[in-house]
Image (cartoon, rainbow, N blue to C red):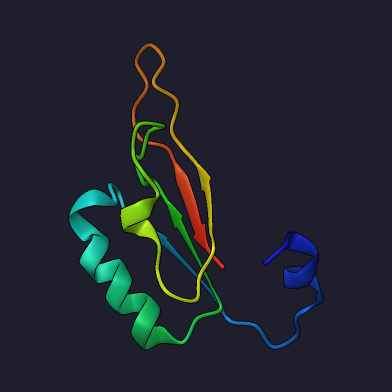
Length: 84
């Protein structure tokens, strides 16, 4: 799904969670996507890096948009992931 298609939608439901590290919570996120009937779920503070594969994150019926954290000097936290 493209950004233009998302903007054209009406009556969409959007959720946001600040999850403070996605890795130990992936089962909870999977359950949330299945049970909440959200069209879009935004996650902040995923702590994912560019070495993390998107494969295990993919959920049926959802596309992923990622902005991984930077690993610069004194870098902590960060990272965004959106399921559309």
